[in-house]
Length: 138
Image (spheres, rainbow, N blue to C red):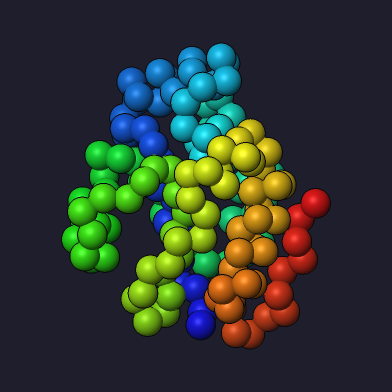
């Protein structure tokens, strides 16, 4: 089954003040583990931007206060945050990595990339039909 997009659901609110607060938390090793992996103090990590380009499907980043529309379309009331989901070309959602797995990769984008690719593979979820599978990072 083919992946049509990634959904990264952060355990943090949206907005400039929340981003500033999260940056301060990162300095002390706290805050959302997913954010700490995909973003540095003020912007997305370069390694992460390269991964987005390489994967070739859209990435959607949502914060805890932006999740209601996703929950409505999935038919759920809540999800343990942070987590990474994928949506297939048929509109189905699958959890790729949950809170505990993301905590183990906090601050290490290459490790997160490898885990994402591994979990897609074991679930039989592909990124594109027209290209070869991506090499695992690491």
